[in-house]
Length: 362
Image (cartoon, rainbow, N blue to C red; front, side, top):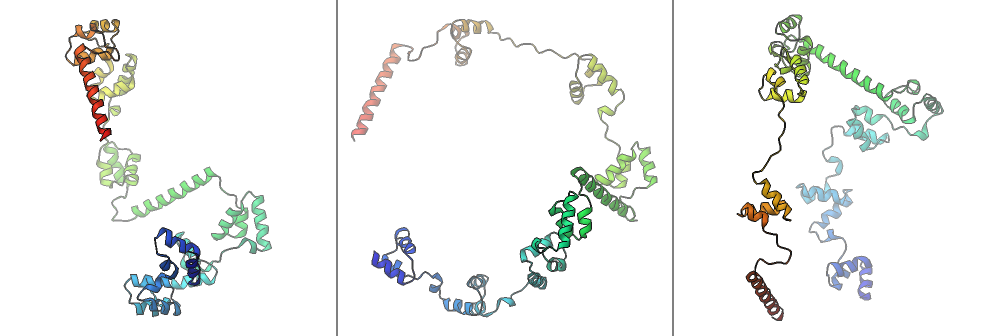
């Protein structure tokens, strides 16, 4: 085997690869020691692969082109720079010249940057910070603004003075600020919609008067239009859905039910089942009565005789009379009902033993 290993090493095949071919892949030693490791050399288009590499086209790029349907001649000769590029290819080249990787360029685009800014704004290296910037950083730290907040502000276009001196918002303040900005955007959207003459969502004083005649509050109409997307015609004309709580006398009957020992939940449940207010508030709650069985005496007798409840009911379910189920003692473990059953069991056991011995002997 050592001779084959030496032959393999002469052919550029290391010892580990030789053993893997022989032991795992079951190759004959001669094949394992002589088969070249370059699997592409066995391809019929191997000469085109060599030509592609000589033309500066990587092997993987050549194979990818072949998979996409290119001819071997085209895949090995057309330079990679003639392949269809992205529309913003010039900005990618600009970014690479400015030391910005393509990954960072794409991430900036995803964050809403313009193509020019994503490719032109250089990455700030902390080691290259000027003395002036370091002084601003120290000032930011004294003002309770950490390093990353400062640089995030500068990266977003803040001046160093603003980034170092403007206090950072606390969590609650940031939430309130975000809510204010969102509310302002909504108001602007509503104003824009209402200024459109063809808008179906414009609210006017006349419409509010119509809603008031229909028993609708101004807040309800605004909520329907601005939050739920109703048209103004639907919002001012659709009456409120009547509920039990909105009916006259609801609170009085609730108090009456509480005085009668009826909880608020039971009162509401009765109304859902179609009861009227007076009956739901005055009908006494029926107390649960324990269920009694007609054979309760037989059950008690069975328990007194050492027969548990489930044995009794199992017997009755199989057709026993209550008297038999309650008085006949339960069999102990290993006890048989009669001698005939005991004899049949012994015979069956002997037959089983004989059959098992025959099976072993065969």
